[in-house]
Structure formats: C-alpha cells, structure tokens
Image (cartoon, rainbow, N blue to C red):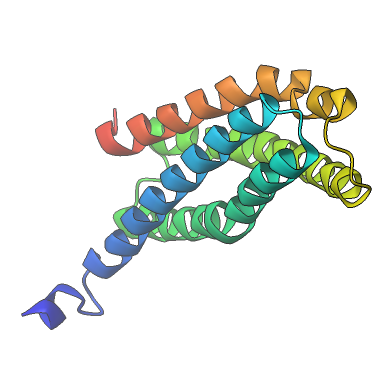
Length: 163
C-alpha cells in the first residue's frame, strides 16, 4: 500500500520530500538561532567556540541542504501544478531569494568568523575575552536575525495558506 503513495505519476513523494525539507529547515534555523543567542551571552572563548561551531555545522549540514532541497522540490511542484503565475508563489520566491539566501549567507559568514576567532583564543588559553563577546554580539546579528526569522514565518504562512 505504501508503494502506491509514491507512484512516478503521483506528487506525493515529491510533496513528502518538500515537507520533510521544510521541517528540517525550520529545525536547523531554530537551533542556529538558539545557539547564536547563547553564544552572544558568553565571554569564554571555549563556550563561544562550541556554540558557534554547533550553529555553523547546523547551517552547513542541515539548514543549507534542507533549503536547497525545499526550494528545488517546491519549484518542481509549482511547475507540475502550473502555479508560477500566482502571486503567492512569486512572493515566496522573492522572499526566499532576499531573505534566507542573502541574509542567511551573511549571518552564517559572520558566525564562521566568530567561530574562527574563538578557536584561536581558546588555543592561546585565554579564559575570558571582551573582544570575542563583542564579536558574538555583533549588531548585524541583532539587526538581521529577527527579520530573517520573520521571513521564514512569512514563507511558511505563504506556502501553507496559499492566499
């Protein structure tokens, strides 16, 4: 019976992959956000390194692949359903290109910079670093982080409600 759900002419398999990627993306973004906030509240290079490394690896191995799979599967589904001309699809594509792609890449790069510096300071044996805490509490994280999360909420609303 399960094999019938994934017939080649059926959209169920592709839709399942799309939804699985959406859940993985949401979990990855949530985890990256939580560890980023936790890293900004620390001043120990070891703790900051651990937290930023978790965030970086989550972005690298969960969020980015899930984003690519979600986007590709969504494009194929939109093509099959012939809905590219609809406003909600165009808005979703625009939000995806502006938000997660541009802002997400910038924030991930900043996170990687903090991770590298914290690794250097931890290797030197430094226990506390105000410089590192300032880097981890970068203004760009605070300015771009909340709108990025809002864009993800808007994307999920667009894709589920299809207004």
